[in-house]
Image (cartoon, rainbow, N blue to C red; front, top):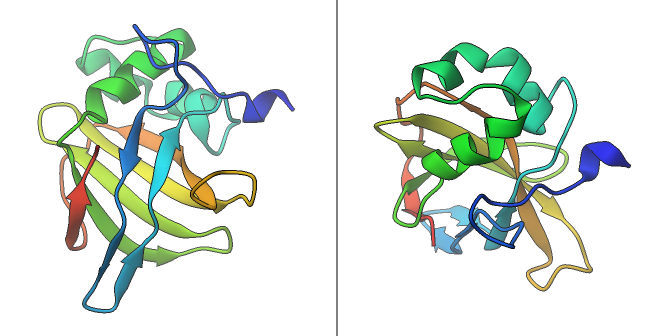
Length: 141
């Protein structure tokens, strides 16, 4: 399905935007996994980000759905803090990455037996907020 099409990270031949490391302390478990951006729909992914958060994108110099991968890559970089938002969903754990100069991306872990880690993180949304929620559980690799 087109909404599940993984988009490429700019200046790369990869669809991996980064990696969330495993965290297992103080009763919080965050599974490890690669981060992917899909084309999505009105509720998640690149289409959602371009439609719902275009003002935030424009403030950072990005516009339109074609610029979403670059916008997401500007937020999700090696060393960007990962916070556990503590939001368990039917599909998995939600975490956020916060880049204090650009904004925040919300990631959701999706279980997938065919993936080497047993699953991966999907970018649900990205926007201009820079506030951190929940404890820091690592940094993007």
